[in-house]
Amino acid sequence: ISGSSSIATMKKVIQQLQLEARLHWVKVSQVATDLKQFCLQNAQHDPLLTGVSSSKNPFRPHQVCHFL
Image (cartoon, rainbow, N blue to C red; front, top):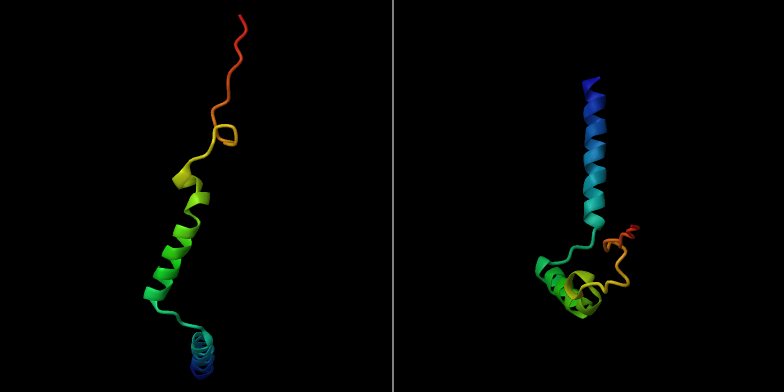
């Protein structure tokens, strides 16, 4: 039983290694440069940086109507 379980374990390891071998690797420095460029290009559309107008903000506090 232990022999067949070790064979199954080794098959899983081989499958994982084959999967990792097919991955396209990119250097972290290149990814960081691309991410920075993307952020700078899209900064004008980022509501965290530019803010949201009160008329378009779905989370604005609602006005309460008071009756006397």
